[in-house]
Amino acid sequence: MYRIFALTLVILVSACANEVEKGLGSQPALSSLVVAFDEVSSEALGDSASRIIRQMISDSEIEVRALLPSLPDSILVNIEVVDRDIDVVGGVSGRAEAPGKVTIQLSSTYPGGILAAAETALSSTIFHEFHHLFRGWTIQDNRFGQGIPIAAVNEGLASVFSETYTGVYFKAAYSCPEDVADWLAEIQALPTDANYQIWMMGKHPDGRNSIGYRVGRFIIHRAAKQSGKGIIELSMLSPDEILAMAEKN
Image 1: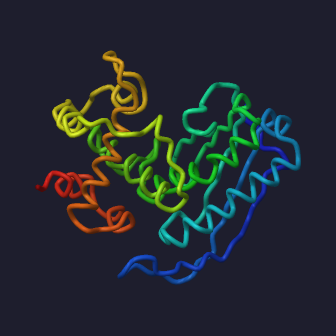
Image 2: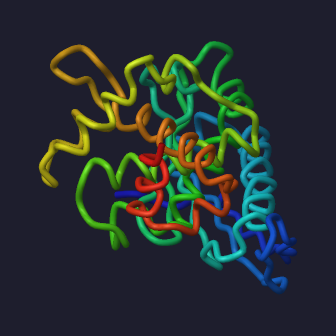
């Protein structure tokens, strides 16, 4: 059974929601951030590394909240240490489990160890997953309908948001091929119940991988170019609106 140890930390911050794009602004709000480690992760990290990771997450939360003031007031981040190879994304992966709840996995096999992984990709992963919380793109209580194009847009928004504000980008995982426009047409023709694992983040039978994530970045960059809107402005729009912008010539 999952147990939350004494290493759980509640960080209360007064996040000043500064205006980051024209027309966007909010009043300061009190937010609650809980960073929790299970027993395995607690033992693998130790007190010093745990404190560093907490601080990194806290710093990132403050930055994201200033950019996206309507982020959920209370957020729980569960930390897991895993022994699988996720080097292609800097040794860190994440899931937006439910409104206000994120799971972060840190790889113990990453070159240099767990802290090296955290220093490489923890902040960018927090930016990505917290963007999902802002959008409501969560595994439970998802605000959106089915369909790979919808998933691609939401993942593309989170990826470009993270890249824009952290400067971290994993080319090997998410770069767009020259024929990515054909990939977009391909996913738009899929049935709404198309296999998420194959088309979004897994390996396709034809050898391609992370199709939806790669197409998602293409959609967002193209929509931004066609509309002149920044990533935060685009983040306020529906998948259909963004896809329509990306399709304009």
